[in-house]
Image 1 (cartoon, rainbow, N blue to C red):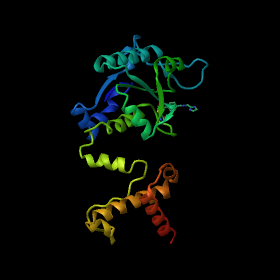
Image 2 (tube, protein in one colour; image 1 turned 30 degrees about the vertical axis):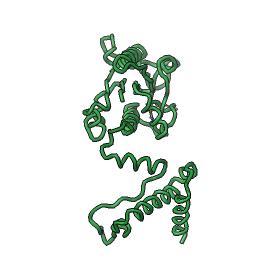
Image 3 (cartoon, rainbow, N blue to C red; image 1 turned 90 degrees about the vertical axis):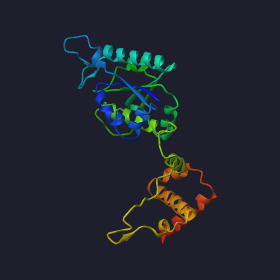
Image 4 (spheres, helix red, strand yellow; image 1 turned 135 degrees about the vertical axis):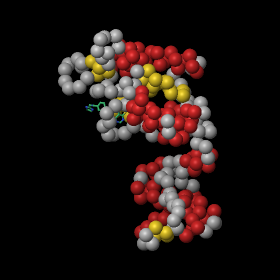
Length: 250
Ligand SMILES: O=C(NCc1ccc(CNCc2ncc[nH]2)cc1)c1csc2nc[nH]c(=O)c12
């Protein structure tokens, strides 16, 4: 997965490149991040990267010439590095709400150029001329597009074959696709007089699998019922969920 990052704060992306699964993906060449900082395109003495909004009002916008210069170079590099035209994504509160389906789609469209805004955002003409898609990561106000860009890149990187070392976790992800996770337990067997559910100590892997599926279904039904409706439950899942609901109602 090749990602060109347009950002005033490229150092923030060390959170991805220097840690964990995504850090190893970069080391192994499964994930490539390259950076273009609009500040490097500033030509004035103060190296300004923001500009005042027409019509007045509070706040500033990303300066057009420095931003467009960075986007153009990132686009060119993406094409040179991969031989493919990039999909240019602008992270913005006005964007489409990102979910796993959206991540899946974006992960298949490498190379990507992600544009992280700061200030109040960017000139609408730049959105129309330079941006292919606008994406938001949720209805809460952040200080810029960098964290949203990292959320997108992290989620997309996990979908690259071979990135998630232990394949079973990727299978689990698909197994529970669309459902909340079941409860998890590890040592010690008892914490403050509370024990681990017996079934997990039984070694009966069929029973453990059923218990975990029932817990996923039940928790999804309790906490995120709208996710259950979307799922076309098979016979076994419907039976397990009904069992959970009956036990819950007791
Ligand atoms: O760049 C981002 N945020 C910076 C930011 C925050 C607030 C404003 C000000 N908007 C004024 C307004 N809004 C409604 C009416 N008036 C502009 C820019 C961002 C990118 S993706 C994303 N996903 C979730 N949340 C986010 O903040 C983001």
